[in-house]
Length: 109
Image (tube, rainbow, N blue to C red; front, side, top):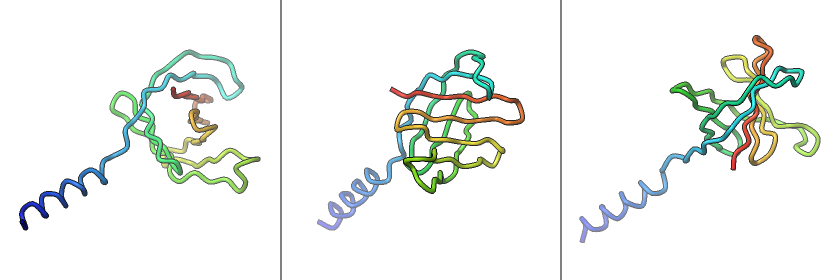
């Protein structure tokens, strides 16, 4: 009886602690001024208050997104790499690289 309880407890804990599943999302690369530079693809891990973008084995974590008023201002953060990370909507995410004058906007299905 004790073994069944232990196994059941471990099974439940494993199910509750599963990692979030990423979604493959197409993205548009553009200059900060909006000139299109092409398309890209990445996997987005959405954690509601943060997100992670992975592509070709490289991951960029947004950190905690902040907005003083989500109805007027886009929730955003600065990554450790110096990029600006923004959540534009439930399905749209953006990374801005001011050093290379580029931004990538991903729209997830």
